Image (cartoon, rainbow, N blue to C red; front, side, top):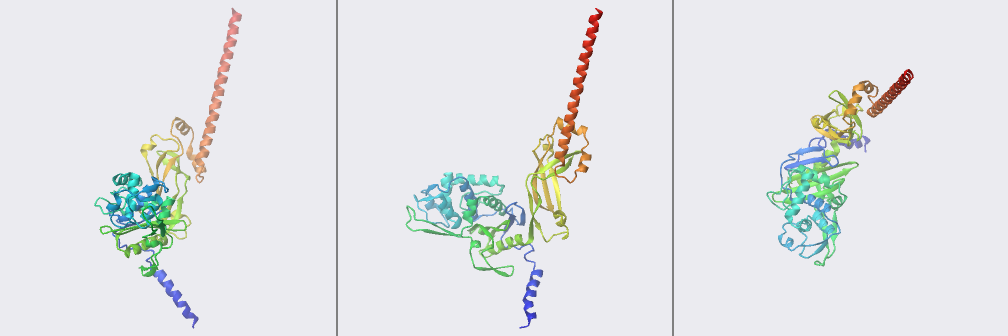
Length: 451
């Protein structure tokens, strides 16, 4: 066989890679609403009507699970109430009144099999009533910034007032993934519940999220691939007639983890959409630290140079298709990034060292890609004013412009000079008082001799 022919497939593959930019272009999502965020920073990387209110179906159980984990123990013994077995609709594991299980078993059933009866039993055990538990869920949602979420039940069963948004679900999931027990439940493929006081047979649980295990082939941007996704870590499926298919997914590769949410899609497209979004995150973005926690920088405020400290790392996913200068080593210049400091004037009226006085923001184009609160590293007061009136900071700034700790050095220098001036002043006063007293004594002696 001619060796030259062997290179034909290589050139074809290279041609496809170079000219088929589907992995880098903004994905077309079939679902009515969707969002893609960084699981660590919350940075939004893709948005399709992310704030539109939708029915969440069983993705509701993400919040149910985290509220349960924070308000119970996995070893709690739970007895199934008399109401749930007769009120449950949709998917269930046929719980019976008086049946005894652990909280761990109920959470397994809820998160793997999406069992509505397990969710209801959990709600009544923790909240005593489903209404009380729903109030707990809504309170937690507001704490997490999910302000467009209002849940009426722990399972996600249809209710016109039971609503959320793709972005709210992403925020809730981002928080939940910080809990290792939550990660354990949403990443499992299968489990079992042993016989109970009401059931003689073992219950087999299989996760409804096919992104974890399915070898079924789907076509994503013209490429055939299994539904199972590389690096998948969870999270939850959902379906009702009104909500249609919903899926919240998370995937991690190396130090990068992303969360995708797709709402109101169909059975096949829900997985294709989720693949597209996660592929987009891993292929198109470079994750970089723009500025490190505890770094100190200068701010000119009303004629004064004040030191500020960054209170958290600013980490951002940078669009690698928008590199301005590939040869530039400085990240900000390379990616065309600008930063903006927003200072709270009210807080600057009266502050002390360590107070949060504003936010430092980084933008790539018009997109906010990262931010951090900043705290001031100097107290305001008479002492600071006294120093400012006696010493020229600008000269020191020029000499220490590139030193992160120049403000600390200047403060030490200023304090030392003031201390020296203070000691000299006291010494002069003491000498003055001593000389004055000495003169008085001499005058008294002269006066006595004259008498």
